Length: 204
Image (cartoon, rainbow, N blue to C red; front, side):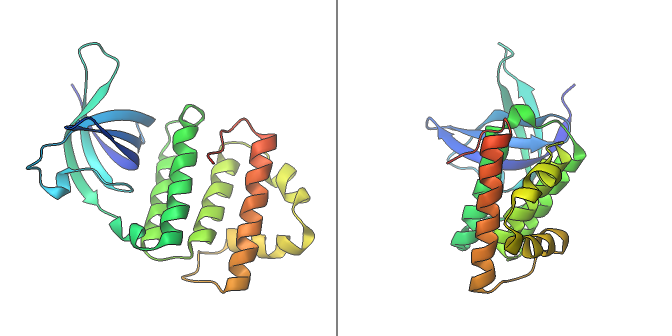
C-alpha cells in the first residue's frame, strides 16, 4: 500500500505537454526522479514548484521503472526565493549539487532537515552566500568527507577566522560587500577542494 511522504522539490523540468519531471528528496527514499501529470485547469497549489515542501503519494508504473505523483499536497511554497537573484542562484546551486550526487546521498532525516533549513533560510532573506557555504560544509562533514582534516588546513590563513564564524554562527540577514566577497572566496576554495579531493560531481 503506497504511503504519503514529505518531499522537498529540488528540480523541475517540463516533460511533454502534460507532465513535469520532479527531482525530490524524502526521508524514506532519499533523492529520486518522479513524474507528475499536470492538468491545464489545475490549481496552482497542486502544480509543483522549485523549493516546495509537499506531502506526496507515489505510485509505480506497470513496468516498475518510474514513480508517478498521484497526490501533491503543498505544505510550504518558497517562490519568494526567486525574487532575489543571489538567493535563487545559491539555492539552485545547493539543489543541483544534491541532484547530481543523488547516488551518494543516503536516505536520512538529517539530510532532509539540513536541506529544508537551508531553503527556509534562503526564503527568509538570510545572506545567501553564507547559507550556501554553511550548508555545503555541514553536508560534507555529515557524509564523512574529511573537510575539517583535509580542506581546513589548506584554506588561506586570512580566511579561516571569517570561515569559522560564518559556519558556526546562525546565518545573518545580510553581510557587507567585503564580507560577501570573502565568503565567495571561501566557498570557491571549498568547491575546488571538493572537485579534486572527493568523488562528488560538481555542477558548473
